[in-house]
Image (cartoon, rainbow, N blue to C red; front, side, top):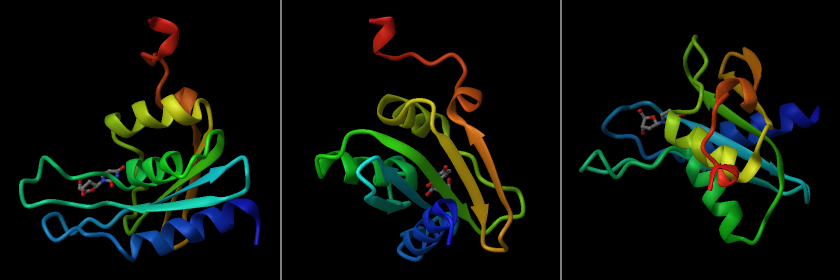
Length: 130
Ligand code: THU
């Protein structure tokens, strides 16, 4: 299995744990640290709706809270024909911790597309603006 396939597979597995009873839109993400460790995340919804946390942010916060710094790719998996890019809030967090990494989108049928963060988030607000 290639590195990308391994990451997609971790995102697929994380998606199995999605708590999405309100949208029924199940998302899995996986983040590869430069250490080689992979962190999975799923979306975790809430009855208040607004407290929902996306899969990407769950994966990032897990990794950061485990002491990881430095990442080289993130994958997002959904069961949709049109692949799912990270939402705006997630792009901001991915940029903060990962910078210009490849975002590997995939669905359950094996369709994939890689988009670099610089293209998804061309004019970021970050520490360079402070
Ligand atoms: N969602 C994610 O987890 N990641 C994305 O990139 C897009 C949206 C979740 C949030 C919510 O639980 C559901 O998908 C519908 O918006």
